[in-house]
Image 1 (cartoon, rainbow, N blue to C red):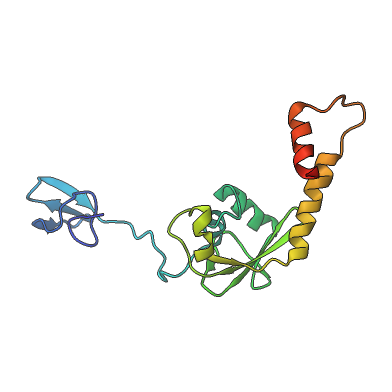
Image 2 (tube, helix red, strand yellow):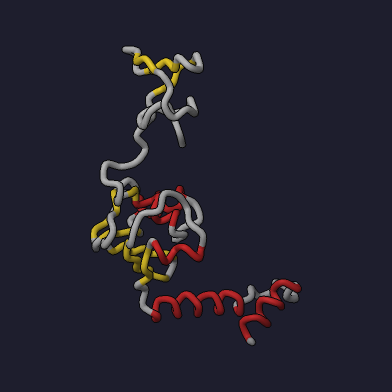
Length: 168
């Protein structure tokens, strides 16, 4: 994003003539309007980022609020220590997430700026989850589909298709 200077935003010009004001704003003489100081939204260490944001960005959770709730509930630990949502994560750290019956282990490779697509997740984390944990999740999914409440009647078309998919 271009601005008046590296620390200014919103005026859209690369090198305008600006005069600083005492109230933290800069006046762009060429355009005749004020530019505000940019807020520093990146952490001091560019390779670090919030834990809840990282978990959401690498698709461990569907929403950032779910990631924050899991951290607050104690389901997330970093380097075997319980972690809060605002904890900074850095490359090389190991994040352990308990999701249902599965205990996922992820190693931080880098911190993305925003949520990444499923194909790009491997650039930002390494999945160290043992195969037994993944099998546990698969078995739970199969049992859930196979299990029907007594007296619930015939399976719906959707239930039947899901059952066929698992039995193939």
